[in-house]
Length: 112
Image 1 (tube, rainbow, N blue to C red):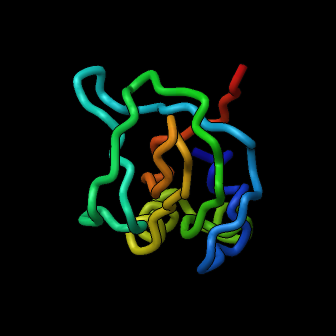
Image 2: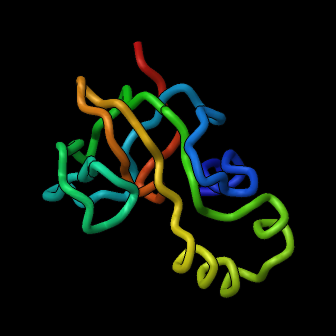
Image 3: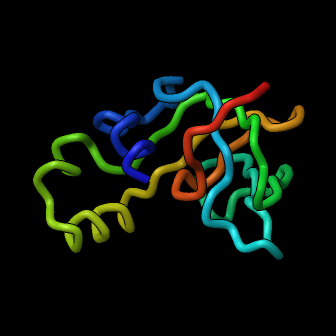
C-alpha cells in the first residue's frame, strides 16, 4: 500500500506512468476477482477482471491516494479518512484489456 501511495505524488487528475512498470494483485479473496473498469469509479462499467493471483499487470498511471506529505504527516486515522474521500485508482493493461482498478489491490510486480 505504501508503495502505491508514495508513487502517486500529489494525486494528479490525469494518470501518468510513474511507479513500477508492472503490478500484481494483492488482498483479493481467493474466490473473488479485481474488476477492470472503464472509469476510475466503483460503479464504472466493468470491462474485464483480474484473478486474485494476477500478475504482469502493466502500469499506465495512477490518480488519487495520499501525497507524500499526507503520508508523512497525517495519523493513520487521518490517512484512512483521506483515502476514503480520495481513493487511489490505477489505469492498467491486463491481457489486452485496458481500464481502471482500485489501487489498494495492487502491489509492485514483474512480468517475465
